[in-house]
Structures are given as structure tokens and as C-alpha cells.
Image (tube, rainbow, N blue to C red; front, top):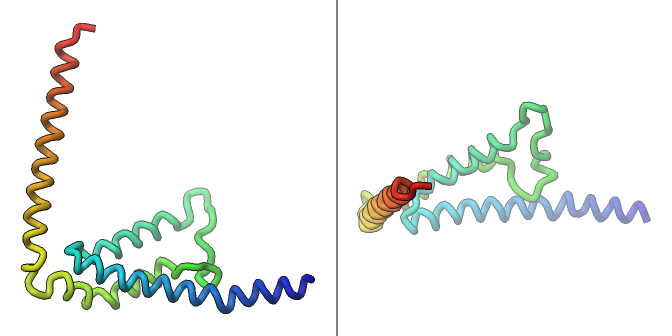
Length: 137
């Protein structure tokens, strides 16, 4: 009855949640290394989680923050930010250990793509303005 329900809940709290948080931490660490290998700046991960933390702090109405870490399936934002600091030197070695040569071609291609997208957007905006000016209604 009630006792077994409490024990099952306690079992989940004491066994499953810590394992889930550990898996999430491992995924974070693997993720920043995969991002670095793919020529994405791994430092962005810390910026994302800092923004998420800011978004979950108490709001102006005083609504509560996220639950304590021991009740969560995920590490706290604070823990993640600390761990990113610990892992970042290794991830940055993956990202730019060769002076950035491995990723330079991707950066050049992305720069060209951004420039082309900007030109295309400007052309669309100009065409839309011409349509508005040309129509008398």
C-alpha cells in the first residue's frame, strides 16, 4: 500500500535521478567536444546555459526557481556552468588546437553564405518597397 509507494518513490529519488543527472553531464561533455570537432565554438554552450539559468530565476512576481538538483533529472544550471569551465580547455584544444586551420575553410564558407543571405534579404526588401510604392491603393 502506502509504504510500498513511498519506498518506490524513494528508490527512484535515490537511484534513478542521480544516474540520469550523471548521463546528462556526460552528454554535455561529449556535446561540447562534438561541437568543437564540427567547428562550432564550444564556448557557446556555456552562454546558452547561462541564458537558461537567467530565464529560470525568480521573476518579478516571485515565482519559484527550478526544483533542487536532487529532485531533478538534470544537473542544475550552476553545476553545468562549473563543469563547462572544467571541460572547456580540452574542448578548445579540439576546436583550435591547430591554430584553427582545420576549421578555416568552414569559416570562410560561412562568411560567404552570410554575405549572400544578407544581399538576398536586401534585394527582397527593396523589391517589396517597390511594390508598395508602385501600387496606388
